[in-house]
Length: 296
Image (tube, rainbow, N blue to C red; front, side):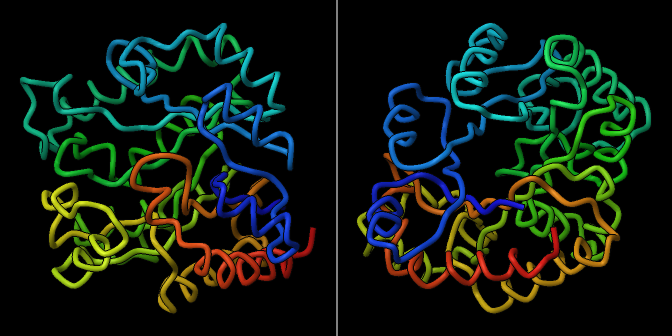
């Protein structure tokens, strides 16, 4: 298994100084940034693609995906898998309450998802497509999409692989009142192809103040106040949970991913500001050692 971190200038400086070891950069689908990142390490793309009833959407361009462009970027970067997010948005289902768990509504969302996946599966093969679990972001994701049984059904029916975002799973579990470990165990862990890890913090007044002190206007996060947020440094609780999950891989209970990615830092916007070099210096080596402890 490889270890990745979001590409950032801070992480690049640490890598070049020999202070952290990273096997591959996790990058957005930006051609200029990919060219920059490839000068220092292998890269792979995390595509901004989401399942909708209209098809697969490019969430940055707000258009249906251009599969020719995705294939070009995939080939030029050496990205092994094409990821999509299972995040049906409330705006696409105006006649269904966001929290509806009626069987007919679940079936509609699942049918829409399977139909949306057909072209990308035909282009790349189901074995080269991975579906990521998401939490409920500010009550905008249709509730069936965060229940593990529906995620599992989508993976098994489509034949695609599973991108397990551990922090997303933990946040989703809390949102629906389910034990975090039981939630993860109910996911399609036998189909894991990639894993994302981060720290999780509750956005209380203290955390909002800390974020503001880093140079990010706290108003950006006010709508999430009181909720749990990922893409932040690991706490000891996060380390313990990550070790628990990786131990399931070590024991052979869960499928092993090709990469474990630390989704911290980045280029541009709030994530670059929040991505502190000292956190990377302390936490990337610890994650690398944790992943390296799992036999190949």
